[in-house]
Amino acid sequence: MEIQKNIWYVTLLLTMIAGYCDTVTFVAADSIFSAHVTGNFIVFAYQIIKGSDVHAWIKLLTFPIFIFAVIVGGRIALKSVNRYTILFWEGIILVLCGISSYVFGYLEIFSEWAMYTVAMTTVFAMGLQNAFGKLFAKETHGPTTMMTGNVTQASLDLGNLLKNGTNDADSLLSFKKQLVTIFGFLTGCFLGAVAGKYFGLTTLLLPGAAMIICYWYHRNK
Image (cartoon, rainbow, N blue to C red):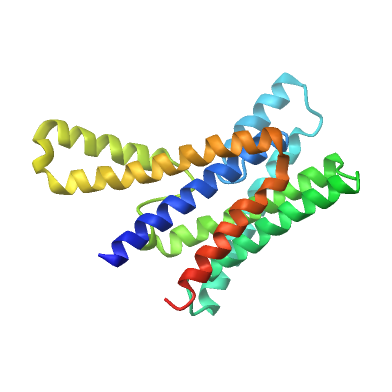
């Protein structure tokens, strides 16, 4: 029972962090998706067709950075006894992103390139979380950085429940699990939108600190 509760908490935390970071960089860093990087292809194509952004090509950099981060995450997993070590490094990177953004702003040198650097580093951090989700799938109730698969599963579960009622225990449990991922991500998106609009990329400190605390709690497990 304790293990199951832990999975619920970790799932909620990771989905909130992914939604938060994805939205913060989108709002405060030139519409860059840091968690769901394939969304940047759409933004890139739109900006090219619209002809309104000379830096649209930068969106494409998220893809190789993401790939490199996943590879690094795999290496970390191979060399670490604690599977949550990947999340520890994600937390450290996010904290550094927040600190860097604050320092750049304080020194009044927060240029476009400084913004892109922080955003791309956040992409790297989210790549580590994606690697964690693939390598340790049983640690969460589903993907934590993209919701399409979770919404699909929730829809299938809902269909089964409408047909069979709450007596379908498996579908009911699965539906509850998917609601955790979807609700967590949506909550993170809302908080990230507010934080990104009013405080910018400095607020990446918050999910970074939360991730480090998560690792600290699981360091001996």
